[in-house]
Image (tube, rainbow, N blue to C red):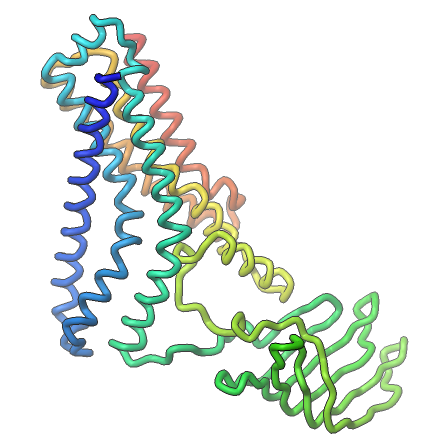
Length: 362
């Protein structure tokens, strides 16, 4: 157990050191890049700059966790190998899997941490980040209507509106088409305005023209009404454009976005790929941490260690290239979303197993 904690503490120390280095380099390069044009154009106050980078930290930590896990895994095992501690542990009866157990446990904990950050921290911090960056610094609107929300489908209803008054929660230019089975129109409701009543979850429409259709699709008659209530199953909050990207949303928010898109007839392929990537990416910290397992089979000479380290880094870095490649293919529809999201994890895991098997055989 002492040897477990001995390796685990080294692993955690290198993870923390790598995270600090990655975050420092990101802030440094991003600050240098923004000073050339962005800061000169908008001239933000110092406190807004500090807030902007503070709210970016959770996402930067999440992105850096797989890198930190990879470096910590390889460096920990290489140093043990170079000082012949691997040989001593093997002589004491510890197998390679037992030696590498701290790496697997550490990687699993980092994956859990990444999932928690992605679900609990990033969605909230991203809202604050976009408010600071898009509204307070760039002077944009705090809320605005999403363009693709002007068309909605709710069961046998197709709803369209021209505009939406955010402050008054009132739809302008409402059009509702009510269909029978077989997609035959039964009636069309045109209303000048419709105001939302949150207490009863209904819309109070005014200045209405209702056109009724027969079963053959011809107009039977029309009538005008001064007002009427309609149940649209539309939440005004969901009509607003979310400034966050899919990777900044929770899994439930992405699922709701996909569900609303499918009901309205929108193409949701890109969102379904993003959902699978969001589920699979936290596991990357665990998968790449296993790369260090191959060093648990023996102590290596300097040239062999250098070659092994380069190979380990190549496999780890290839994860991000494969992930972006299959993600692009998935959004094009060339491969299913499930494969697009999980292929990179499976690919690297297979290479890790092959390397461990080869090291054991040698």
